[in-house]
Length: 302
Ligand code: CP
Ligand code: NVA
Image (cartoon, rainbow, N blue to C red; front, side):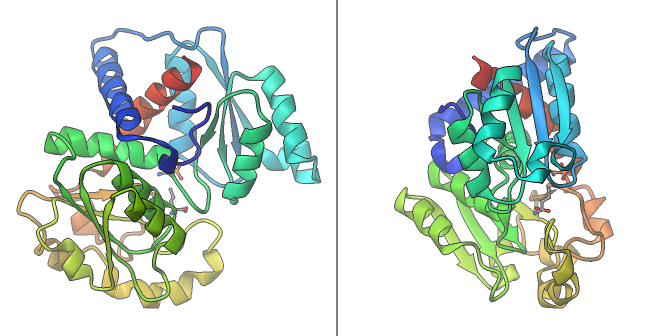
């Protein structure tokens, strides 16, 4: 693995498999009451430009369980909000912290920060990618399905940051990803072609039933991501046929699981009965963010 975790496009299958193994082992030890104090005396910074419940909390608890500390930095309270150059902020934070996770809008900003930082930088979500979420979601797939190889994974909804990280994962791992997205809301062409050029089995359709048919995993996310609040009404109309409901789930394999990174908008991208139903694994996804973040911190801090 590189110094940073900015995108799954930079990871090989062996990197992801190593993270899955480490996360599963750390989860097992935690359940047995064994502590992995890999961060004793070390500090994790969390620089967040956008809201978060799960990612912030799971990273904070991960650092604490590993024997380190976490420091939450709301960027609007710092000199970043008063235009201190990114490269200066990155070098300053590198003199205090051992690792930093950043949630922001621009992937280019994150990459500029990582380039100037001496410490590992983790992408805690940008407009383009959400790599840590997809790693922890794949951990849930492995637990529920016994592995990811040969699975048919469906993405139904927006071609957004989560979709892009799933596409990046499909570039390296042996599963088939079919995304159903409305016209005008397809994933980024460059992300798709990069994955296909690495041999990724990725298809895009505009028919949600085609994506869900015989799927082992059906995945969705909000129709309007953070930063797109002004498009909420337009998107609600466009995405209505892409709702994950019992009708769509009837197309999937009998033992299919339903995934959502949360927060969920019940009655929009997913219905209450499906989200709360027996095929939903959303609370396990939430828990696995903690175990995966511990594995990521352990690997990046060495
Ligand atoms: N899934 C996820 O990233 O949730 P938060 O926005 O609450 O961190
Ligand atoms: N696509 C969503 C994911 C939230 C965890 C967003 O970016 O808001």
